[in-house]
Image 1 (tube, rainbow, N blue to C red):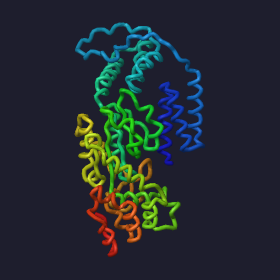
Image 2 (cartoon, helix red, strand yellow; image 1 turned 60 degrees about the vertical axis):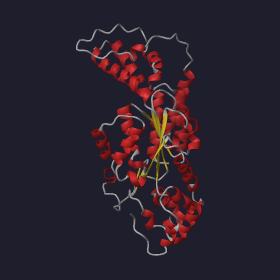
Image 3 (cartoon, one colour; image 1 turned 135 degrees about the vertical axis):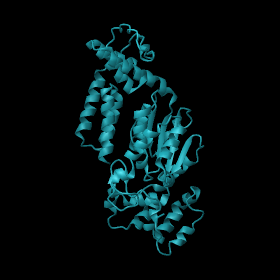
Image 4 (cartoon, helix red, strand yellow; image 1 turned 45 degrees about the horizontal axis):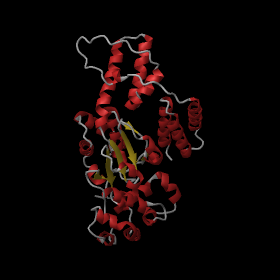
Length: 390
């Protein structure tokens, strides 16, 4: 398990702990301990969440009018003085505004604390305007699941989507693929979420037919997927005595993993109606990443700021992550993602005839169904010199 995934899990737990969502925080810290049972931060966070959760007694509070948070008038040159706020404790205010999401909840607390301190109105007016904009925008933005077949190039686009949706469209960007199973019960709410997953449709059954949920599917030539997995430095230790072709052959037939099931999950996503699942191939995405992000934003109905889009695509480009061009040899960058070569067709440098034949028998039909090959003649072609990548 990578350090970045553990750190991300701890951040989720701390965020919910600070927001008073102790049950969710407890689950997040438990998940972190599953990743690293020796994590002191996870153990301390879990103990604190449990302690605070026990102290939090259920309260029956008479409903109070807090509609001021969503009815802020448009500012004029001489705004009328605001009415005096009701004597409302900040913690109660946060509870009342829970349906506006984490950011708005925090802003509401800041507003009330600022009022209690007797500070100037100007900053509070900015915060109220932000709450008003969030309450106006978020109900019209669909939730988004980004599925990608593992080792199919998520590093090229997930960081862009994550930053863009969170900072520009007020999305909650929740978890990583390891969180999909336990995170789902906490995704419901009016603030739209973005979640990156490796799970098949059956794992997300409750979301499949909702009008306010969209799905995006990234897939790749299965042969390159297996080579990428086999070349991952995190995996090479256990396969030090094997060639890449031997590892690929084992992966294809299931003796070194469950790639047959992973390919079946991708196939299930690709079988869904295009109106429900926007699908795109790694080989096409890498040719024009801004165009792919633009297509996703259009698909979920979000306006596009071209200057901002180009900036983020450049900031998260392959060249920025690795310091080299695509296809150029160099060290693998391993964080929450794996960034290796960023090219298509590298399988030709690693498959031998034996590996190709075993792949054909166990997974070859996906190449035809996904449009990578018309038939199985590619196996025969490997009997000559190894082909070079496209």
